[in-house]
Picture 1 (cartoon, rainbow, N blue to C red):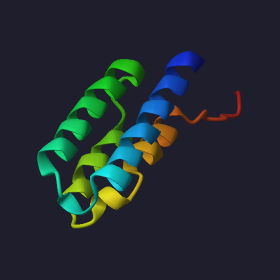
Picture 2: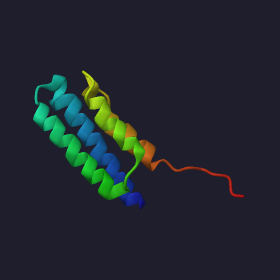
Picture 3: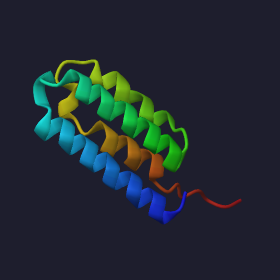
Length: 88
């Protein structure tokens, strides 16, 4: 993962969450919400590779009012955090 890809992924995640929280709240546009989630998932996998943190973003969407949580932003931050391991 390059720093550029990380920043692009983070920006896309924030924009997707803002769309789902501000423009499409309360499931008024379910097909659009699903389309946004599918497109963002594909883009994240292309940019960052598969990460287990992306899976809850889909599961939470099935819960009522789940779109009101910034799940993509959280998932990308988890997937792109830098681990600080102690060298042996």
